[in-house]
Image (cartoon, rainbow, N blue to C red; front, side):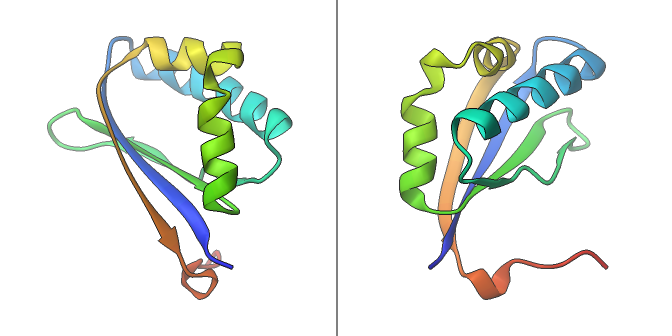
Length: 102
């Protein structure tokens, strides 16, 4: 069964340290409420200051359930409040395409 990835691109309305703290709390909250969140492996900014974040779920249905529940997740809401110009690309990822740590 394929995994389901979301690539989120955005600008920040806060400093990076505050964002990273909010992100950590949001990930913990989503993981607790939606245990089929597989990984949130990295985030970072490009040379223009635009950020990217990667969220991977076990299935498309798991991603859709988490997204539908977003308004009920306070920490996730606080994270989303500091983002602007948000765009999301989502796609299936073959299990064989998931790498390992080197």
